[in-house]
Length: 275
Image (cartoon, rainbow, N blue to C red; front, side, top):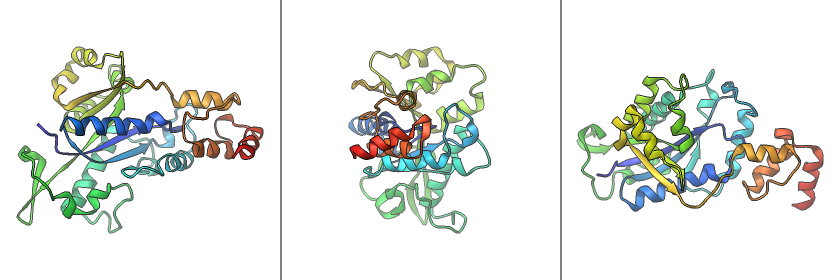
């Protein structure tokens, strides 16, 4: 059965963003659509607050600027700076719920969203309610619907998009609370993009919590190997080596211009000469 209208949301450092961070959205969307599992109407990238304190985490203003450069050609993935604007680090569960609540309140026109314009991370399809409610109706459970002015309005679910490494981190003692995991997996759901050869299905089987909510976990295998990570890019930049073709050229130019991750002035000048 279709999961209805879905927004994919990735939370993390994005310090800096890589091609794989963004490819996950495309891979997941294609998979869900090709099997008729859901109608993906948008994607959200939510960078973590500076207070998260992870090593090599540069200021949110830089991470957001790099994400904007990396996503400038995307027609459906948007950036939410909500987490970065809070007083401190926000738990993933709370961020997912916040974005889902705002989307559905805006959709059903029962919130003024603090008397301000709609947030710029809202998917384009949400901004036009008429478009959202057009097309063939889908037989969904009652708890996914609300009645508005006599019409049935399909609610949107915000699902956490992640890699298999985040899924496996659920087993790390003290890292995630039971309440958070139950809410994230049970109420929102996971879309997990893993590399060929990994076995997230076995991890789900061996976890009582994940197994209980296994129908709310979608596993997507990425058969095109891509081991690029933010750590790799930072290491290359720190060593003065080339990170070209691992992320967008504009992202590399930005981090060197602002001398992030140990980039030197000589690297900045070299980029300027080659551009």
